[in-house]
Image (tube, rainbow, N blue to C red; front, side, top):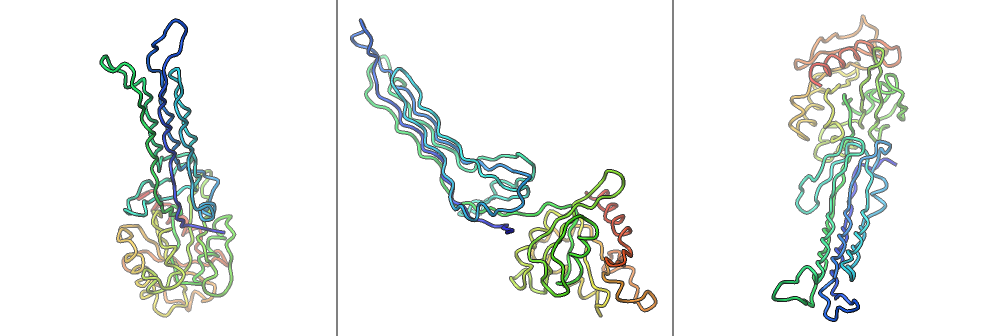
Length: 326
């Protein structure tokens, strides 16, 4: 199951309490204070694991709690620190504080770590409070509580290029032809219900990551259709490829609809380089096509995932844009 949003409660460990103790040694009838400090509470840590692709584990485990620090002991013995707890997440995970909305971290690299809840400090034992005027303090500090909070985990797929189109515009078929990805494909709208990612290889040793999200409809940014949850998965894409069926009567209008949904979701999409691909060209013979060279200043390429027409050209154009703007 693909899960890209989860709410989790995290609680760091409490610091151990300091110890009140005195030296008890032969021939030392009035030994000084020897109470040790308490151990530090464990942290809650989030770590990126490139082998993960979903937040499914977080969705079903609602809370993570680190271990408490142990109390200090006599003879200046420090208590053991509490155990940390580590939450594994896939690359592309954004962590937010639910209460403030603050972005705590945007994790993109394998093994990248961030402490999301700090453990409390251990309390000082009575040995720490000895002074020339008070040589036998009988008090120690309690341990400090650890941080606790609700966090929102939001996954944004990491890709170099992203496919944008209406439902059933051929995005999944194109992804399957250019990469080893095997998304569900059928001849009806909303076949794609989750983002799909594949690697496009070109040249001898080069490649880029291509993402396909569910089709968008007008009003998607306000909650209509299945695309609303997945618009954020295009945010990291450096190049946008708009797929428009060649059978569309008004391709310019389709482009404007899709473009508007992106801009309404996040204004920075305006500055992303774009390509427009007229898909399913096998349905219309070349002599019967209405040829358009550009739409809104963006180059138009004619492709067919069935016959392979224009696919190599499309890859070349994407690579050039990535080299220029990536």
